[in-house]
Image (tube, rainbow, N blue to C red; front, side, top):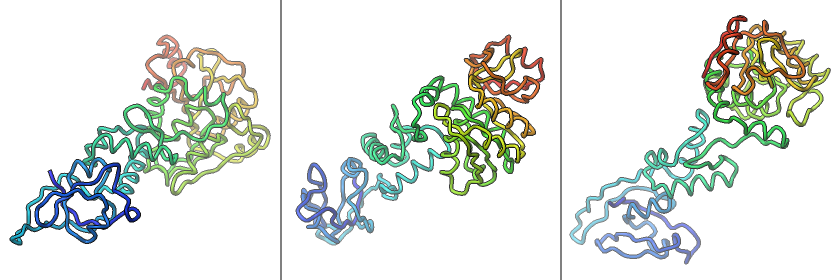
Length: 340
């Protein structure tokens, strides 16, 4: 299968196109080996699709598709299976656009969409990962995580990751355009912020004391973000203390998205740290509706300090591993339980 192009040279004089010379079809129909692309400037040529795929695209500065002619002056029909619209910059932009709306994109999916080999797509992803644009994972790529400088937070964020993802995906369905939303600290809450679809980016007003949430929301194109400052608690990557509490007391929100260390029918919403509990209690009081996002390991657990009593919680979003009896007791207490 041939892809016909008109190409200009790329690279410095005497520099080959890649590790090997590029075969091309000259106007007289002879297949030649083009070791130095500057020798064919402005000359119509056809690059084999396999070579185009090997390098991710046809040689740089493709300007037009032109049919080479036979010695008799007739155009040689050439079939183009490689979509030259997807140059390297366009591919990168598309990959980033996909990752704005989903956590993962696969090599196979991109290979089919771009018309490239899996090897070429992997090279694209590796280059993007080296630039810090994505994170390479098995079979494809994911969003890069927010910069994490706290080992304790990083460890917590890596636990029960699959459950946190499905909880976050379900929780964002409860948020509507135009709402004002408090985002509390914690890795599950940060995951909810990362899952917010693009159509909500310019309509939500986000208020948060969580540094990972601040980093996520501030990366949007047009965010409405109120960052709550105060004393920085490194292990939780959050701002606490009297300044933070005073700031939140001056605001009201439609919804609070809250995480926890424990949620039980007898102990309510709890956390080990008193200052974290204090700002959480304030957030719950200032919100018209409270949504708790907690994976199954938190359900039935009773922590050191209460954030809020069970009656202050409107909705719980958790995963299938949660204790059924405890969920039934929470529902009896008036909480809407959503198992993602």
